Length: 351
Image (tube, rainbow, N blue to C red):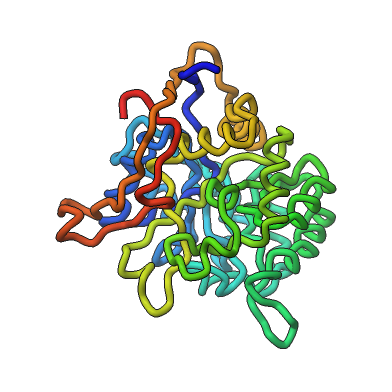
């Protein structure tokens, strides 16, 4: 087996790049992780609900990482009228993110009734925008819904949306269950699914009591992780990388109510290579981190003349933490990465 792998720069179709000092810290790490195309999530404070807000955010991101292509998104809210959808499409905005109310970080402005937005979804279908779904129902004890079954209970809504808007491209984000995998596979070619690095590694036992592995949706049972691993091993073209890398300061992760989010940005491609080698499917890595997602988002295919990265087989120790802003890790607030202080089998030449 070769000790080097040549790959195109990866495309990450779900990433949280934050704002303020955290944005200044993590955006330059995108390339460090082997990525040069990234779909930026809009759940800031306040959320990106208008075209101009998204365009301004994209300008700020581009200044921090000039070599990276940032795909911009809007946060579904009452401000997103059909007219605003047309304006967004004309400005080059690619997708709209849906957060059911209260299910994750900065989702307090989220959706309570999907049918209210059917005119917006029709406009998105007409203008070829992508609908990105955080696929969970809000927890509700009276309905028997909790964080362990919230994704599975949401799948009926996914089916309804696909039936109502069959030409609308829909992405079920960060799937965590066998039920979600089976549902997406059963639907048409306009429905796809992102899978994170961390959900391919962990199960419920790995985040219970470990706040830096806690995210929403939570990792589920070993059988669910097996289903995620199997679909990427099979090379299904409608399942592709969306890291859902979501940094929080350590104090927010280790507080009384830990913030939801796992941080993988600076180690993303080495993390994926390590996993795909363990699964015996390194030959499927390029398609998962580049080809499939780019095809679904209708981006240009990578050509033989495009720049590439080289992975070499050499142990990479994941740092204990990364300083936020200009301070050192000892004195400043820090963000703790996934699998901190553990070793990966691959690293990128030049980083």
